[in-house]
Image (cartoon, rainbow, N blue to C red; front, side, top):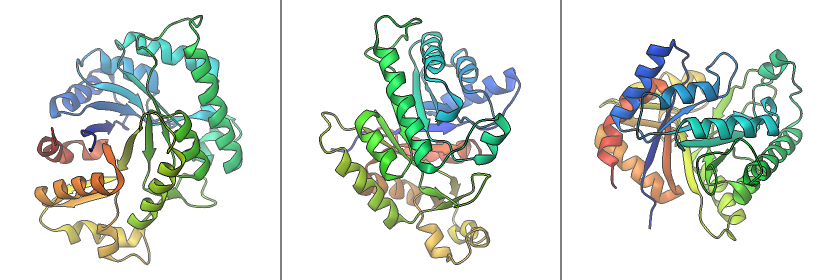
Length: 296
């Protein structure tokens, strides 16, 4: 039996307090289940932004999507997580990843490291964070019991193994980093490649007592009768891709409302994605899709 849908929106644009809180209220009004914030230089600081969101919302969960493990000492992160969970009334969900933008590490004076080193750092952060927060002696204490839910994001084998071992939510990006890029440039992966990644995760997670929730980040949503018009400009950004191939990408939802609803249902059946996250520019466009899928 499929999990019920959950829908999140990743708020990426910094704003003064009143404007920020208005966006958060609007997300809750539209029916989103989770308000999320990223962890990039030039964007909002995650934990104070979530506390501000909690002050003007009642129902939505609040999460990081996702924290860059290199930016956080585990002991200091445990303090932030526990404090934020308490101040948001036990609504926090913590997402963690390796980080993929070399230029941000340079700007922060932090080592970027090889892919393997970044995964090692993520594993240490996850394991130490869990150990600290699971200790009854840790102060401050989070509000949630038995623990704050953990999301781990990424598509590589070692990250998928870590997610299989520790994550309550396994997040897939539908894209991969461009080798050698210092700015975090990403290219989409095909539906078939995502099949393989999800299958690999399921293989690694086969021994779990309880299945994790599977999340997919949707990069663009366009409710339209002209799907090709949405995809055509993207062929310039993805040389060698046809309009048809772009429209088949899991991270793109484009078409009439009923077609998008069918696509989301089909992707849940195919991959198991019951938790979908859209980016802030798609918050309003995705709202009617969310309304149609509520309860299905």
